[in-house]
Structure formats: structure tokens, C-alpha cells
Image (cartoon, rainbow, N blue to C red; front, top):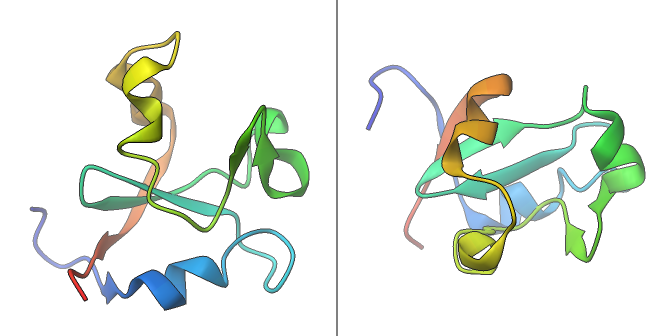
Length: 81
């Protein structure tokens, strides 16, 4: 894991869903990404995926590769609560 990134719990991540707080964050493989700048995540939803969640399992069947996350800023690490 990257040093220096703050750690957030799943409940803290859940608030960054584009509804409760202005941030739109998702977690993937232990990292939290800010996807708020993406037009594809408008209002905290991208196809059937909702922001504020760990999408690691859901994205196994996604039509894109992990490289899509290189477009987004890592803002934290997801704590194992």
C-alpha cells in the first residue's frame, strides 16, 4: 500500500457517494479513488455501480481493465473494519 495516504473505514467511504457529501469515491483493491471528475460517475452512479462502496468484487466482470484507475487520484486506503 502507498505510504502517506489516509485510511478510511467502509462507513466513511459510504458517505462519499455523491449524495451525502460532495465527494464521489470508490474503493478498488484496497485503495480509494476520487471519481468525481468523471462524467461517467455523475450523481454517484456508473451503470449499475454506486459510489461510496468497495467495488473490487463487482468489477471482476467489468468490460475494462484495471488501468482505468490510473485516470483517477488515489485519496486513501480502505481500512479492514
